[in-house]
Image 1 (spheres, rainbow, N blue to C red):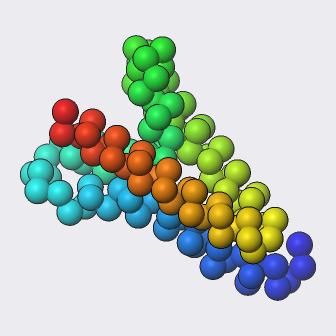
Image 2: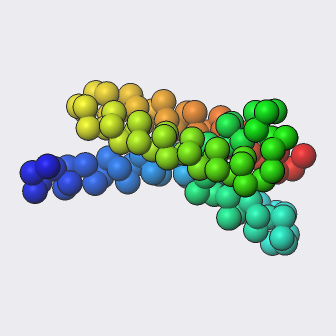
Length: 117
């Protein structure tokens, strides 16, 4: 990688992280008291983009560590795919960010529903 490549990719990576994680900001601003349950969800924030994998019935029936590991692996995979697509050109980067942001919003709505369930 040439020296200026990171300078060009840094804003895209920051934007990708923003698109993937900002939809979960409701965790910080919800009216739910700051108790152990809410803190548990806040601790899960880094792996929440992979939430869909964690709620698959076959995974959900396993011990918590299995579900959290699956969610973490899915999140790392999503971040890797987004990072790869960001490096493939401006048009693909913009499309990737839009799709990643929309999917993250939908996933965040699912997380919010599960939080209040």
